[in-house]
Amino acid sequence: MVTFQLERTVPLPLEEAWRRLTAWPRHGDVVPLTRVTVVTPGPTREGTVFVARSGVGPLAFDDRMEVTVWCPPAEDEPGLVRLEKRGRIVLGWAEIEVRPGPGGRARVLWREELRLRPLPSLFDPVLRTAAQVVFGRAANRLLRRP
Image 1 (tube, rainbow, N blue to C red):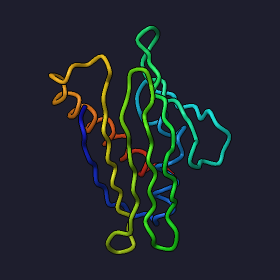
Image 2: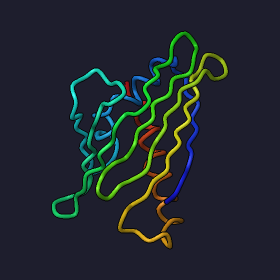
Image 3: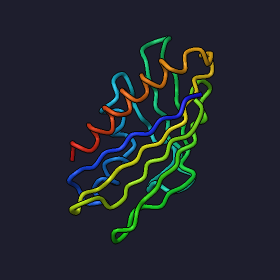
Image 4: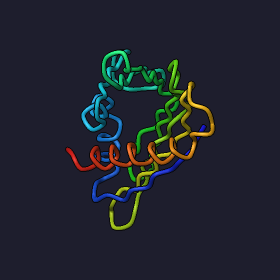
């Protein structure tokens, strides 16, 4: 199991950074070979479930997630969403926090604990590096695209 944290400061209002990061299907647009399907009816709230299907053909797997904390930002107050990963292969949690940053910018903190069930802990350093690259690029793309 690995943990990592990403930080970004972006020239967006809190609410817009939040909207871009929590529009779940958009994650499939920025992560290669991934499609995201929201299973429960909207809007997003505690209990919302979505599935990220990653891979190709027989090498594809589902990363099932449930929103367990949903506190959108309001009037310069930070927002926090927590996802529990409950797939057969991908386990752990992710938290995305959006807080006021300098000069009216939004500061994003993305924290994650990730475990791939069949992967022994010997591979944790490789998994951590790969996760930081993949999720870092995803965060950057989500925050850049309206």
